[in-house]
Image (tube, rainbow, N blue to C red):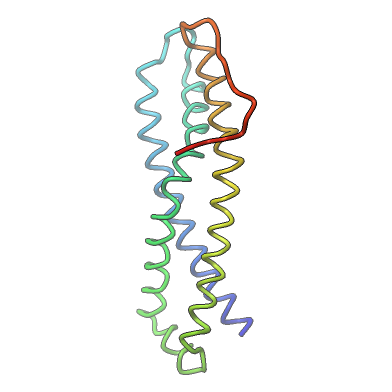
Length: 152
């Protein structure tokens, strides 16, 4: 069962990672094109636009990861069914309950990742984005709270 677990985990993680990377690249490009309109204002450069887009990726990841998890999971399981890997696993003794428990473990790990990203990384990246944008803003002051709460 260790080999089966490794096969399912690597297939799922690979496909979910690829879909997440594709969505992140798409949103990075859209954000970058949007940031290009501010080029040249108050010393705003291409590198500053790239940093702005990097800071925006945390919130995009938090929004897109459940969709990427669904699409990547469907792709992974469809590929396993297409190449008869899943049929061979079922014939070899993998029951439906065991297959669901393996996928459930991945779901719990994904939920933990979302908790970590949503509670720690996204508030930090939003604060860094606010500080970064304040450098090039016409407003004089920036007031950031000391709390780590982030609501979506």
